[in-house]
Length: 293
Image (cartoon, rainbow, N blue to C red; front, side):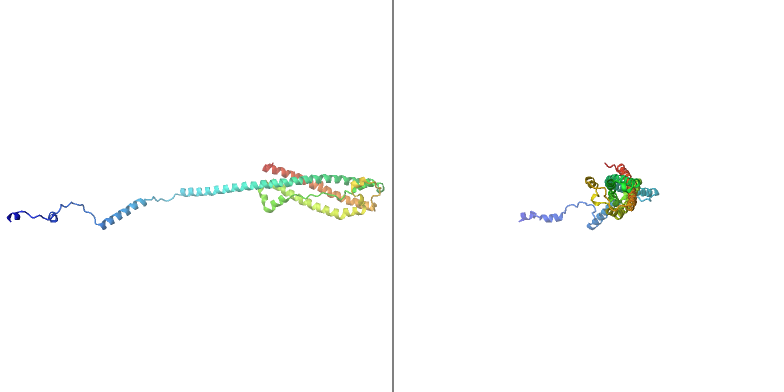
């Protein structure tokens, strides 16, 4: 029994650990959780301010700065204006060239017709001169009736000009005449149009005079059967080709002939010849200005 008491009782390990706790490791003073969050938040805000809020240098603008900005703005506006202006000039030049080609075509057509009219009126002037010479130098009873009739039937005939002025009228009505920068060309075109108006006025007077005076006289005093020269030349007709053609009728016909010759010369030598010269001059100016082929 005594031996059993000398043996020490086994101790519980947990009790031993409680009796001899492990040595404490010194730890630096750590902030409380709430305090740590506050410090981190403050530090992050300061860092953000350092990154995004960089210091700016503020200084007043000098008058040279304002002048430079104004100059650059003025240069930009001027450059845009010049480019737009050049574009408009280019477009207007193309339109002017198109109108110039159309005008040349109209004037060339007028020139061909005017040449025909002038040729006819020159021949007509020769017939009027021959008729006047016959009536001035030969007595009525000795006049060669056949020759006289062939010449007299041509009295009252005419060729009129119907100008191709559609392009010119379009230029004026639309204001496109401003596309032509050559003032001499514009003046010549205007003068040509005025000549055409005058020619149309004289032509209307000539037409009315022949319709109301010359043609009715011819229908009364001339043999209509032989009114055409080709018929008169092919028929074997007597010399008595005129009816009721006495001295009074001869004088009346002479006066009609004088007025007819006046119209013929006015439109032939004066009016249509002037039209032709101006038309040729305008065509030449258009070709030189716009290099038309």
